[in-house]
Image 1: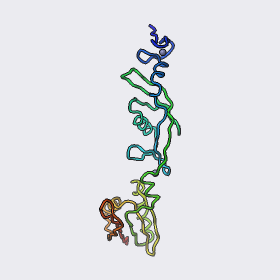
Image 2: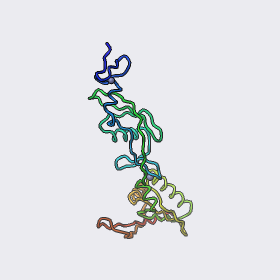
Image 3: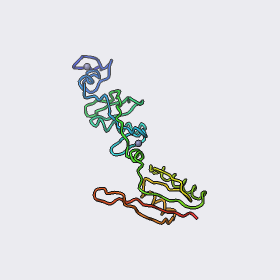
Image 4: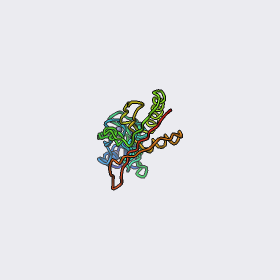
Length: 211
Ligand SMILES: [Zn+2]
Ligand SMILES: [Zn+2]
């Protein structure tokens, strides 16, 4: 049997109902409580999106999480998205509201993520000095590059020198892991370059002779 909306008298034969009221009246009643836009922080260099304290490659799963985090009082389901808008379905099961379709405007706030920031500042924590025949130096450089890329770290500079190259690296920790995993035993030296919260900061130099 058809129900009728107590506000506008529309029939449930003609329109969807959420609980006791029709869709139109429900949406009208909610009015400005229905979200229309979401602010997203994007890295202007690598285009990754900020989620909590991290910057992550954009995909629908991430966008869905961002929308849900932004509109906590709703159950949010992402239907589709373009660069500057997302179509979602908003629900509040406890109020019998099931899937209001809504277009959300995506508003981007640009900044540099920590990684791109360090890159822009030519940040480095250490220098790996590769020495030996050009072939072995090149081979080791490629291995190193692969590991740094896979771990989201980088070289801020690669300088050719007389009998090899100097690689300015963004992570001491990753360099140490690289060396120990391969049983490499570099000659280490340390240079004090600053203080952070009263702690001394050192840059490590790893001299590696490959022949
Ligand atoms: Zn109504
Ligand atoms: Zn970035």
